Length: 118
Length: 113
Image 1 (cartoon, each protein chain N blue to C red):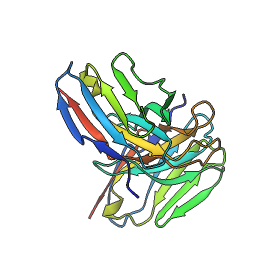
Image 2 (cartoon, one colour):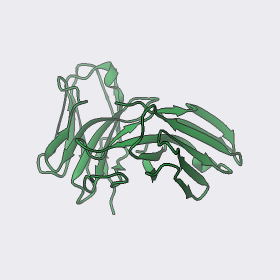
Image 3 (cartoon, chains in turn blue, brown):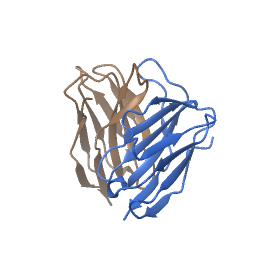
C-alpha cells in the first residue's frame, strides 16, 4: 500500500513570496490533516479535512494560509505571503475515518516539505 | 488546550544502554500515542495506550500509562543505533474535533555505536 505522498520535499523562498504544498493521502482515507513542525517542536495541527469539508481550522493563520481539498482526495496548502517564522516542516497525514472513541484509527504521515523562508 | 511536557529534551547514550523518556500532563489523557520520527520523515505510530495502568511491549520498547492517566513513559532496553530519532507523545482529542492530536515537543534520542 502506497503511503502519503508530499511534494516538493524542500522549498526555499524569500519572505513575502508565495508557496504551495501538495499532498496525496493513502487511497480511501477520508480524513486529511496538515501540520506545521517548527525545528525543536512537535507537529502542530493547522487544518483537518473530512472528505472535502473542513472539520477544524482553528489554528490556521487565515490571513496568510489557505488549504483546499476540492475532490476529497488531494490537498494543497498555500502560504501567501510567507514570513520568516513560517520556516518549518509541513506534514500531511491521513486517516481512514474519524472514530468516536479512544484508540481510534492511526494517522499516517507523509515525509513532509521542509520550507525555508529567507 | 492542555500542554504535554516531555523529558528529557535530549538524550545521548551508548549502544546497549537502557533509557526511559517521559510524557506528562496536568490533566487527564483520554488516550495517548507514542510516535518515533526519523530525520527527513514523518512520525510513525509506535503504540496507543488507553487504560490507566496499561503496559504495552513492542520488542525492546515498553510503554506505561500512569494509573491516573496523566503521565506515560517509554523504556528502551539495550538501545541500538537504529533507535535514534525523535520520540513524540501525543494526546488524542475526541468530541468536536475527533481524532485530532496534540503533540509534545519530543525527546531527541541519539544512540552512539
